Amino acid sequence: MKPTNTLTTANVLLQLLTLLVLSGCSSAYLGALESIGIPKREVMKFRVQKARETQQETKEQFKTAMEQFTALTNFQGGDLEVVYNKLNAEYEASKKKVEEVDYRISEIEKVSEALFSEWEEELGQYSNAKLRARSEQKLRDTRIQYAKLVDTMKNAAGKAEPVLAVLHDNVLYLKHNLNAKAISSLQADLEDIQSDVTVLIDAMEQSIKESDEFIRTLEDFR
Image (cartoon, rainbow, N blue to C red; front, side, top):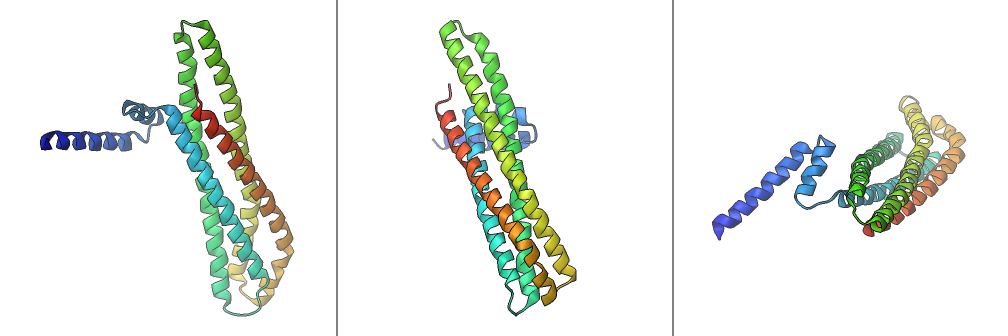
């Protein structure tokens, strides 16, 4: 039994290594996944779930950044360097999360292109006209829902840009003007950034809702 187990383990490791090598080429990567029993629809579902998680994390990150910005405008004394470092850290974390959201969206777009192309080709393989028509309608419906999902995700990601811009400007300003007078000047941007964060959170929540609906669609795929 030991040789068999060793061989099985070696095969799994070889498959994993192959996937890592192919990950730079989307079509080859997806093909390799299918060769070990992971269809494109499961990859799509997984990537939408990851995007949903990232959006939730991004929403919470911007809430934290907003709290830090508000606390900074209410500065009553202490170490200004510490306060500045906290705001800068929140800005960098927020920026990183937005970049991660963009990456998640691009990964969804890659697999969707392969998935829908394959589905379209497979329609020609039906001999039963009714089943073909049913699958074709499901494809149309899924494409429509997918387009809505991606548009909602991109819209939410776009709402983060004004907030990042304000945070960046204020962090940059404080970097060279770290004094109580500079801190008090942040009050001018407080209302605008609060409004922008509220809009962002609403957009993220809508995008998360769309993700949930699309995941349910994939669970009853074809």
